[in-house]
Length: 311
Ligand SMILES: C[S@@+](CC[C@H](N)C(=O)[O-])C[C@H]1O[C@@H](n2cnc3c(N)ncnc32)[C@H](O)[C@@H]1O
Image (cartoon, rainbow, N blue to C red; front, side, top):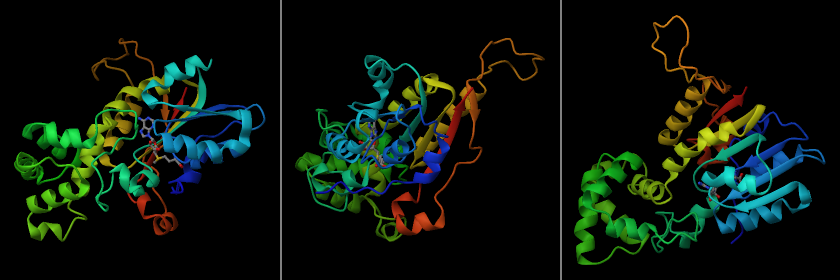
């Protein structure tokens, strides 16, 4: 299957980086290399792009797509949480810009046997990094009812989380839950019929929740952002595209904290904590896709772009 993915907020993100032709840029969620291709097109002969992804299929697809840029491109298969150390091993300590386009690619979603989609019947997998041992099947079959409830409530924000967790545990006592189709059926039975007609596909939220938990998406994001901001050269920018409120909240709060890290009580006349600002938030409000983009790419619907610039 060809690697199909339409890059979201492409112009806005690449413009947001304010690219210097001789700069070093990192695309920490390389995917099919759509954003990276545009970044590379704006680099001169001494500019450099480092692309990171944990998914083997993305590495292969982006490798071919960016081949024409030759030595200017370095591709690394890794989780972006290890970016600082991976860049150190290739002699890069500081960079001029970073892109994070979070979540899964359309290729991952549309490749049925990756098990991300509730639209196809396939083994419950959902690993972004196929080298990882644990899959979605382990979560669904081994987590306690309380843990499943927490995951579906917190990461899926599903109001029927409790009932879905209960039904999963009931069903797996009869036989293991191995496929997306089985999970769909269980969720369908756990959600009252009148709510299934509104609010999108009944499985959408639970699938999102299991995927976030399995790939530790929110922890990894939360733990990586300060380091990424710390790696930016003065004037360097980080552009982050999020796809749901849980991610967006993390980005917004980390940006705000890096802009104003002062912990002094508000009545203190001068700052005594000594925490210095790392830079400024460029986007007071997030940048959203325009009507034209929404029309040709429905998957851009929930996208939000936020940008931070290093001092
Ligand atoms: C939305 S796609 C990126 C698409 C890309 N911007 C493009 O235009 O083609 C997200 C990609 O990030 C990767 N990814 C998500 N979380 C990651 C992480 N923590 N570390 C490395 N790669 C990650 C996924 O495997 C996926 O390929």
